[in-house]
Amino acid sequence: MDKYTEPHFDTSALITIDVQNDFTLPDAPARIPGTAEVVPNVVRLLQAYRRRGLPIVHMVRLYQRDGANVDVCRRELIENGKAIAAPGTDGAELVAALQPESHARLDAALLLSGAPQQIGPNEFALYKPRWGAFYQTVLEDFLRERHVDTLVFCGCNYPNCPRTSIYQASERDFRLALASDAMSQVYAKGEEEMANIGVSLLETGSLEERLK
Image (cartoon, rainbow, N blue to C red):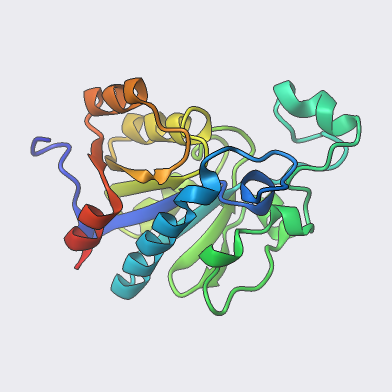
């Protein structure tokens, strides 16, 4: 870390990636191994951010049943009837442990329009149409309006959506941290790659201490 990459936790936001039932639960149709196991640490980070009143953004996927908005690598699967994170279904919902006390169901129509949905005090859900959290979303403007300069990432399936999102955030000059024990499918080479672009690799306990 140096003066340009060191996280500023007082002006940070927590970004969760795809911690939804259809990617997490044991019988889920698109279960990512290891995601259920990191949920307790994701919850610890959420609690730390809620205590501080700092912004939280849950990035979610919603696959329309006709496949119209689905990545090309999964489109045929959805067109053939596979329901994954379908709008309005329980499978698309955030895992129950992540939901704030006042949480209402995800508003699929609002999210698919590109607008953020507030689900708790300074806590929001935002739909992303592809791997990266910044691709065709309002995330950057949303964060800049709140004077956020540091992002802490946690959630589901590091090689795909989190990795892409972190690179996109780096391109936008955000300071970055990866909660390595609150992210599924993290591997040693990936951690090396993250460190090489100035991402701080921290475990949940360390992040909790820094947020006190």
